[in-house]
Length: 413
Image 1 (cartoon, rainbow, N blue to C red):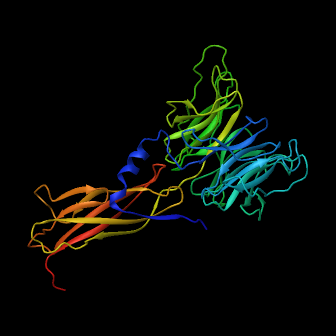
Image 2 (image 1 turned 90 degrees about the horizontal axis):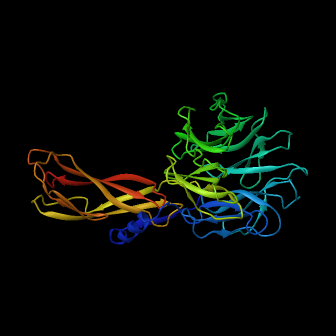
């Protein structure tokens, strides 16, 4: 069960928060990007903020630790490490978000590789690739290390990516991207045909698009593409711009929670090694977030959900007497959010059940305060005002609810 921070957004405290949230280049909760880097000599897990700031090393020792992802609730980090056997013998581990309490989830014979772990959207399962049966296949294991199971048993299957609803996995099967239905309701669907290699799929947060790496361009350089979730509309987002001898690669895409940005691992002319970059979802504004020569690679972004609006109340919720005065109304919203301790809530719209000819029947005076006209039609049953309230977290994900305020025809029961 996810433990969430519950706040009550009161009207007088949100203006500064709104200004601060809007100033971020790429938004999201702190330390929500995980990646690995060999800047300390061997691969280690690091976390950073969405804008590249506050890069913090999370693993120690001389082993290789790589391909990490922060859990949806932000409390754990899953990663692959060869600390239990060395060499190419990688197992799946989890640790607390602060790097403490490292626990080994998988145990396989020496020389096997278990890697590319990815959390299910609900945080209950971890999918990963393993060659314990020979060729790489997709496995899944619960976050406590129980109920490990093999999900695929044909060809070569690698690089699992959960759909936002948790019912499907996009994988590389042989040289192409396939989508597997985990409910068993349909056969695997092949989404790519242009080769020679397509892999490292990543679903957009709304499930409508998939970003992936392909080597189909002349010269077979790795590039980040995007396509619709049914495989149509495949577009190269990182076409090679350098006409000289400089290296140009792009791979391992990961979406920001609001779908506005894609993070990727790339090399550009003048760069001695791979670094983490970010770009808008249309491929524009490509910007490096890490610097070399040490390698920084394969950034993942923690899955973040929209705020959950638990309660809403207006005070007062009845305007009486209906004498044409403007009456101040305040709104209290209960918000549950596991990524942001202070989502920003505001009145986003005002409606009325009665047609109102004159202007000035309402005035928003603050994020969650409004003046409403205490008036109704004499021939009707009463007027109902509907206030639409939107709450947005630091990842620019929002939820909307509404509350009614009545101006009764009279005060009789």
